[in-house]
Amino acid sequence: MPTVTFLPAETTVDVPAGTLIHEAAILAGVENLHLPCGAKGTCGQCLVEVVSGTPEQSGHTHFDEALANERLVMACHTRVRDDLVIRIRDNRDAAMRVVGDSHFLINAKYLPDRDNLSPVVRIERVTVPPASIDAHYSDWQRLTSAVNPDHRYPAVTTDLRVLRSLAAVLRAEDGQVAVVMTEDTDGTPRVMEVLATEGTVQAYGLAIDIGTTTVAVQLVDLLDSKVLANRTGYNGQLSRGADVISRIDYARTPERSAELRELVLESINRLIAEIIAEIHLDPAAIHAVFVAGNTTMIHLLLGLPPRYIRETPYVPTVNTVPSLLAVEVGIDINPRAVVFFAPGVGSYVGGDIIAGLICTEIPVNHDEVFLFMDIGTNGEIVLGNADWMIACACSAGPAFEGAGIKCGMRATDGAIEYLEFDPTGRHLRYDVIGEGKPAGICGSGLICLLGELLLFGIIDQSGRLNMERASERLVRVDNHNAFVLEWAEQTRDGADLLITEQDIENLMRTKAAIYAACDRILQNVGLEWNAIARVFIAGGFGRYIQVKDAILIGLLPDLPADRFTYIGNSSLTGAYIALLSREKRLLLDKLAHGITYVDLSSDVHYMDSFLGALFLPHTEIGQFPTVAEKLAASKASE
Image (cartoon, rainbow, N blue to C red):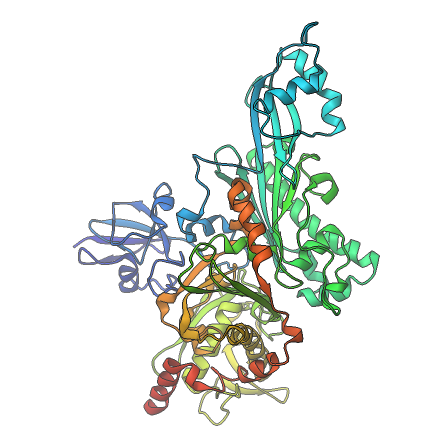
């Protein structure tokens, strides 16, 4: 039988030929390889590196081509044929993993065609003929004729800096130049720079996702679409508020608004500086940026007053931001680089969601109905297809980021990110990001925990701990009922990791807000949950959710597992796509103008849906038939 060795643990197991790699991992006792999508090959969380040997793909996934060059395979879709050495990758740092690998989660047909790119900035190599007595045309006239020979465009524009250097550049190179061009918002070509063609002329762009919690940056070669570097870091504004509402409140004075602008710019520019240092890049070679973010984040980045976003009638300064220069925005690259923004829909459905939609089939499928969910501090929802879309948002709160939870933390080193009870319900097994002793528990772990506590009867459907149950983990601390995740001697800081009933209540409020938002837009269009053909789960955090646990607690609808698809940080991936495709940039504008925005704050029935969802999984258990069966079976086995 073939032998499979798993690194870095150096665990070896003999398995029959044809065994799936993830099955071999189970036999070898490898516990940190999870399948959130249920082995459908859609989430990318079981990516492993083939160090040696040649495995066999058992079924095609849209990851295969993208992964081949990196010797990465899907453990749930790859079989053992001969001896293998497999390295288990650390895919679990939900907050800090960059979305460079989120491209693998997107069907390749929605990514830019490398042979037919139309980036926001392009390089035109032209020869500008010299002036003469007979052809007495200005340098600018001759240049525009060279870049617009068929007069396809009625005009070409530029700025004073380009005109000041134009005469010298044309004469120094005998008219052989590289023209860096973009398009204004109305489609008019703009000359950004005129460069000597001596040597290699490069053009780079940045895709940037500004999230409430994290900021992600990708450096992209605009000439061939390759992603050259990725960086992710926390949004510095976190120190002034965990969610958009608290930051809007904080930014009510010009001084505080300026402070928040500086904090997010510091976060962005630090990541850019790291990328520049990594690949030894001249910042002047970065000519374009495409930014996606929610409405509040864009307002704070640009120094626009955000207060009116949450004041009646809830109108932001702008939904579609015109293109700006990097020097105006404050991004530390070529000061004349053009900065584009994904258009938003309303006060709480911004460009990050619109960018995410172009990573899916929703804008092109006329026959089925889809649900798009970006689950994070804010929950944004889109329902519909190519013919119609309706969108809303809810303030879910930062509970799934660990805030407001006694031992909660973000998904960084030391966080419990997955856990489960053994069949007896007495022993708890968990995985820690970075291994070692736990320091706390992050969002994905909290969802697992809530589901396990419910399934084994440790909490009831109202979230109350069953203190009459015989368990040493059920304790009273400071007059509060609590459940002990881990004892002090087994934790990093030497203190018990406790989950209180108040923590559970906070988690239930978060999940109820998201489910209720989905419920309301379904009711608005008269559809039932079963009408949804596919649920796209977006966001860095969303990718790490175990669907079965999320259904168990009523965060996600009770639909078959194969209807759920993870698409990772689709905001950043959408920004990358838009950076390289004029067609997709036009689609963004079309989507933003075509979506019907529902403001839940003025929906008198939203609170009814919210209160109904403040139960595990729901007050109407009939909405969760498979969960009802599990709970009945669990009670019967007691």
